[in-house]
Amino acid sequence: MKKIISIVLAVMLVAAVAAVSVGAVSYNPIDPDTGLIGSYTVDANTPYAEEAIVACGGDLSETMTLYFQAPADWANKFNTFAGPDDSEPYMHVCIYWWGGIGKTWPDGTGVQWCGYQAHLVDKESRIYSARIPSDGGTPTVVWNNGVNGGMDDTKEIFNYARQILDLNTEGVEAGTTDTLPEGSSDEWTCDGLISIIDYTRSEPNSLTGFDSYGSKWYAYYGKGCYGNYTTDSPNFHGRTASCVNPDHNHAKPGDVNNDKSVDINDVLCIQRYLANLPQPTGMSFDLDAADVDEDDFVSIMDATRIQRFLAQICNIDGSKPYVEPAE
Image (cartoon, rainbow, N blue to C red; front, side, top):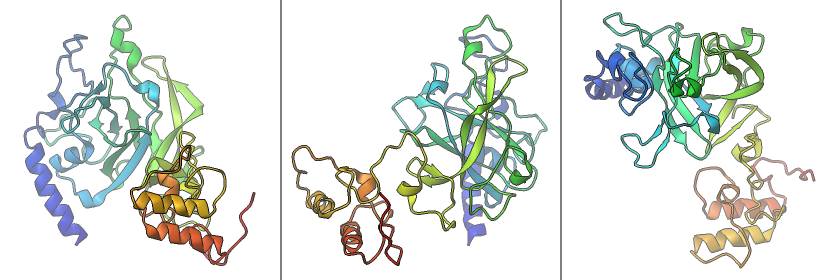
């Protein structure tokens, strides 16, 4: 079934990218603002990674999905604009890989910097995703902000290009600085993982002199949450509880009103929410904390989970036997 779905997707994407499959390497030959010939500064016509794979004859069933959290200061006037399906401007991010399907086009023309667009999957947390080949020929990728600064440091655009250091996606544990989250079973794939910039590791870019930073792999849980444990690890205790994203200051699971405790008031808050009743004056309502069972919906089952927790029938994550929460 997976193969059939992949074939259907491939046919659809081939039709969508037929117009760019051969000419994609010249989608922005001259930047009118910078005069850079061959500039590959991202624009709305830059193909996405999976489009490139299909256009080059690749199979979408032989890919891995990677995630990346882009720093806020990567955004600038050269890469922040609306995409074809989004009227509100946002920062565009690209990914480039050094080998495998999509590294060159069928005519042998090499894909030039900045590579291909990534999908914005969480605007608030600036998290992007891209599908890359997993055929054993793509050991490293580079996330970048889609800006080709060129080599002329007198031009304004020169100061806006940003990228991370080469990132391993295969044989990760063999590296001296790369590590996989606990629970990862295969060091030859980073499927479903997110790379987070590590500001303790940096090297000056040989072309621009600007620092490029290293990154670390984490498990991505969705909704801007990532952590040190995959969902298969015994130390994973739910998306919100396991999240280490410093931008997420959510209340702990079940603490719906964010009063630093889980009690019957949290149950009442959920009940009022489901009944479309306003919350008591001055009381907050945290949607993430209310989704206790993490099924992406706030329902009566979440209120029931809190009640079972308060009755010491199960832990807040639904596991048994009940363990007294640490203060």
